[in-house]
Length: 326
Image (cartoon, rainbow, N blue to C red; front, side):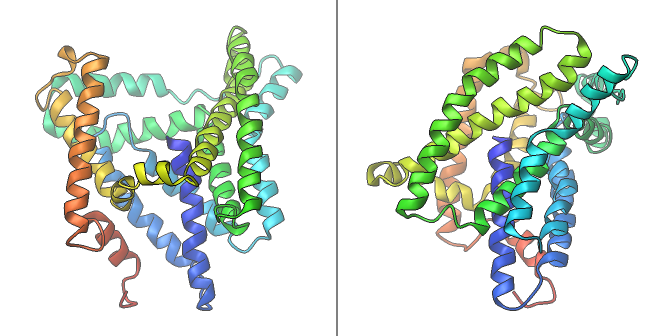
């Protein structure tokens, strides 16, 4: 889910920057301001989510789109591939081969999450909210660095930007043929990449943390491309596109839904709310998730019948374009 989100984040940047380019304007600096605003939403959401918020990672990594906005298509494509190859992990692996004493930096993520778990279980509102936006966010961000997601997210941003530049989401025979190739190659690649990842994880910790992380990111990327390519190809069929048409209402209010999910979830599951975690197994939690989704979808349809944008989307839009009258 986060990988698809990252891919679309880069694609959305293309759409916004391209619209401004048509008017002879540089969207870059406005985009930096938009990232700063996203940081506010990230902090808001993180307050209700002890594991930290992925939006903070997007805020920091999003700067790569600003830096590469004027690059050629070829340069952006090459940069995306290099980043998706997980160069940091391979650097540490090779460094260890040269010097067996070389180790990855210890970012103390496990210790931080231990503290997060302690104040979450305590059920104190003040400690929970303050801890989440400080220690929780720090732990989440450093975990992403350790897990290879920092570099992969940058690569996915650029890949989404590249897809937009090359108009690969446009419906035509050439792109459908390309999507079919992506689906086939990704589907064939997933199984061996997953198997190799599992085999690598049987080695010593340094290999797990380097080569293992790289293969883990690659098998997840392959699966992400399977999902994206499958959806795009299926969407060309009227029956499928009609069946999923209602999702567009949910998508138009994605930020509102995303943050409201955290607020609803903390009330249902955590000690500062109903504390139903000890009583909810996987199946029941899945049913709760579906129920929340359906209620949110219904609300989205009701809201968008009366407003152009969701409430948080409206605030983000207005603040992004402050001073322009948009």
